[in-house]
Length: 147
Picture 1 (tube, helix red, strand yellow):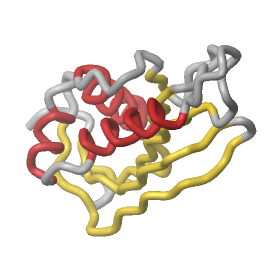
Picture 2 (picture 1 turned 180 degrees about the vertical axis):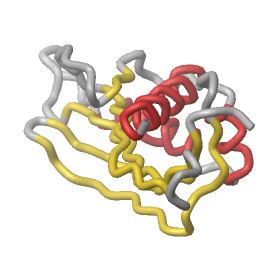
Picture 3 (picture 1 turned 45 degrees about the horizontal axis):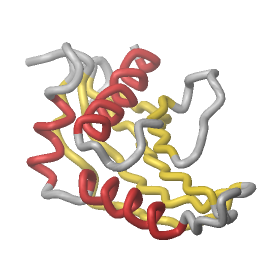
């Protein structure tokens, strides 16, 4: 059950971000074995904890990472302005009121419902090889079936 809820969570975030046309079509499931090409958005879900036990309701840790190439393109173009736009667009999708994001995520995958978020949220910047990375982290409460 936990594997299923993790995959449904990843698919819901992929769907919401893809619909928003954030500036890149490279939107990946972290568990996709294909090579991921920046600029991209990677949707991850982990650590599904059933609460209360036996209910099918889970707390799931979610990470949405936006990777932007840090090196100047072959043609001499600086990727930072486009990258900043993509990052801003992704955060614009995620940083809405909780009720709107809950409804959008719940509508993306059949037999999946998001019921809420924890109050904790983290936005981090880092470097991964030749990419700048902006990561949004949140914990959500969800179920792998509709009510």
